[in-house]
Image 1 (cartoon, helix red, strand yellow):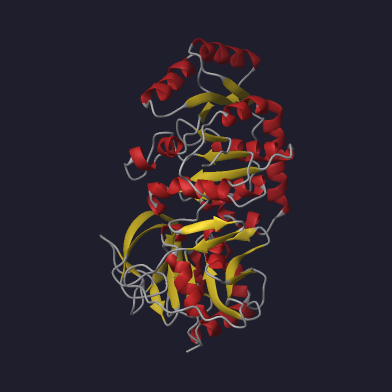
Image 2 (tube, rainbow, N blue to C red; image 1 turned 60 degrees about the vertical axis):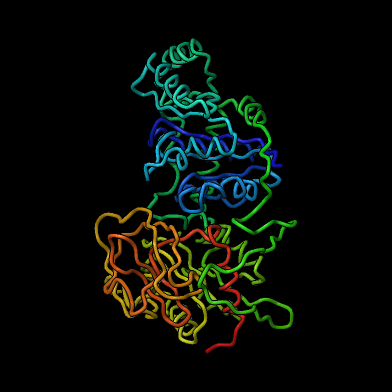
Length: 474
């Protein structure tokens, strides 16, 4: 049974100030010496990273489409263990779903699964008494959703606030805060920087989080919000877990899962009782992978060491495998290219047959070049950046055996990139999916793709990677 005070922060649609409010709320509670945890519904690495920075522990993604609705409760339990308050930031509008499955994948569905009260952030800049009709509609739409109250943003004046509060009081909806137009400043670093400011603990990101915390502390009734959060009932049947078959024991989870059907299997070989060193791309503030990736690798027996691809000039001593997660942004390609010593070291690691898993911009880093800039040269492909983004989920089928999946296995992943590769796939592609050409590269121990997979959906990835890392070089 999981007993964690919790709230889901949602909105009628995007653009109502959810991210700034969520980050500020966590920062404000943390400043009160309350242990807090932050989560983001959906695949957005950036929002979850800033939630984590505000909370002082890794921010996590709760994405029913990537990991399956049945894992949401256990992933929440894992990420909120020991917390006195947990905040789940929604995506889009409360009842929206990118894939047209709101009953299982919307913020409302996650709130229902977590038995959590919902607080609705509402931009009232062009609204008066109609706010009551809007909020009443959201409250009445689904009886499974517990709408606990609202926070008003973009309030014009004291008179405007009074009018809004009176209208909401008439329908019995509590108002937990009202922020003027200047009180929720757009201070977070530009999204073009991705998660880098958080991963590298940049001063700008730290100051922005502190400022949002101060703004929320001065305008939102945190005491009443905490009372609401504490009214959430216990979650039964959810142990702290990291995906199917990984049960936390103290600070270290133990793996209780086998490999996916058709995946290669080998026993883990360790040296002197110490597991193989697996380098994970990241920095002092975390990695470019989901937090569960590192937890699963450690559970499988790996010694996980962080590698900063922007500044480290060599691989950590004894590295036998490398993981580059999908949170690494393409916008830092110039720095990837300039770090020639590390590029050479990565190419040598791949040449010797050591396992290398690269997702998103990690694939670009392994290519021969991007827009004329030399990369690692592991893969015989050239990347070019284009205007606009390729964004969306894909249900993909593995074409050959690799540490990520056995041939024929299916996964759900997420793509977000502007660069395209020529060729799009190697002789052995990583994936195929309906309506698309083969994508990605499998070569020796390398699995590289612009598709990002959440390892909690298949903890066996970590088991297979550590097994391969423990075997002698080819």
